Image 1 (cartoon, helix red, strand yellow):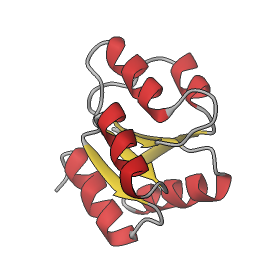
Image 2 (tube, rainbow, N blue to C red):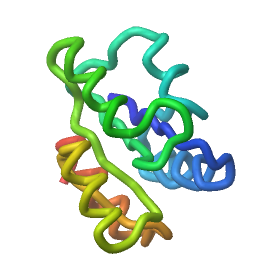
Image 3 (cartoon, one colour):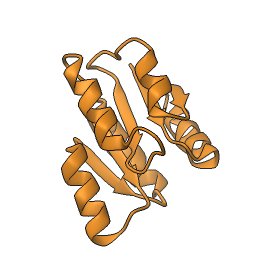
Length: 119
């Protein structure tokens, strides 16, 4: 089982990757959705941590493209958006779970573990 982190902010991506690794997960990071989608589809047992506000291909478009490939892994939306903008992004992406940035490390690991079937 691997965690795929799609986040354009390098510092945020590094922090998320480090958190996931600290909990024993294998992690692959991507700066852009296009790089993630250029590779093979992750198995449904993986987890995708997806930034809603990516430049280029949006988080919602990425989730849609991933699901169009077949059985998709759970998607955890992360976003710094607030209010109605956050709600719109969540509605468009339709993630399995969502968290607002800045992430609470303990809550993130708990949610990641549940999506991965470890908690």
